Image 1 (cartoon, helix red, strand yellow):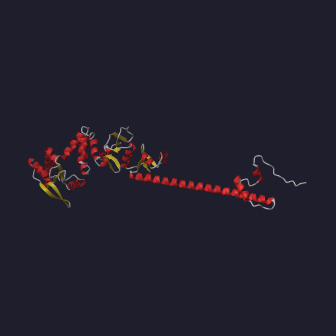
Image 2: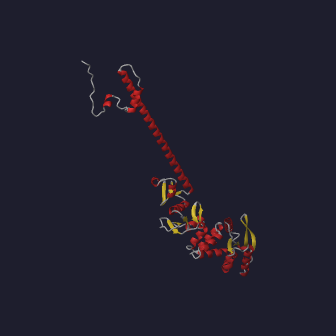
Image 3: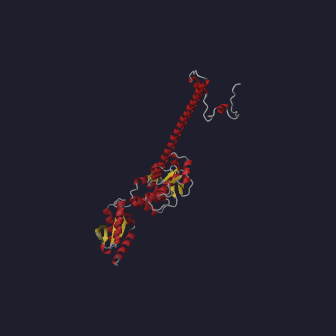
Length: 396
């Protein structure tokens, strides 16, 4: 009787080949790989068992080659993914650096449109707001890193929030130029077309020519001339004169630009008020020093005051100070402020320093302009007489 070999039972849910070969986790060789293995097999003269062993080994080698090829493909894909991830991280770092550099140039603030231009999508911007890397100052304008920004940053944030073509203007512009000390509660911004006010913003609409717009401290702002014109319709004459004076001593006032501006906007509210203030300022501007001194001496003679010392050196503490006119026995000094001799910031500061020193040592200083000598003679004379009489009564 022929030998009967035991055969393992066949499981219907497992493929026959996997059941026949216990290494079921190996990938099955493809038909092409099996054909290649058969072609490569030598013509063995030995028993069928040897040929079977060789074929099995060939199929195993083919499967191993397929595994190695797949591993190489997976490795290449992993390398590509790693490189892509590194590129993305580098890009994020570059964007963050660009945001910080922009904020450093802009008093700590940035606009949403600027962030978009740097490559940030809206959801990325919103994420930075949510986690506290950006802080909302106005709609579309943010502080970077922390919510507290300097006054210049508050102004620039208002301009960024107002949109394309917006510039700082009116009282806010006057403070930026150094013409006024205090701004209003809301930042005033001029925009090309009408827009509704927003919290913290006072929006004005005007189509501004290029020569009426400038930049100061990195902030788009109306020029000094345009700022004065805008305020002339709201401020009283005294405040307007003070602003014109500050512009003059700060070497910010361009007479030609102001003249062209007044001609361009003839008939507009505020033009006459500004023109009157400038006319008062120019009164006596072409007078020489000698003419000013002669006008004052005529006032003294007409008022029958005692003659003053002219261009007198006054000893004040350890310093000698020259004054235009002085009554040393009464500690009264008069200084004549001509446009040519007192129109720069340095000279203005120097004169105020001298006045303070004189007052600290008991002197009273009176400053007079050509306009006052020409149009306020009676008032000036009465004030001088009272000062001299007070000095003769033993006042310091």
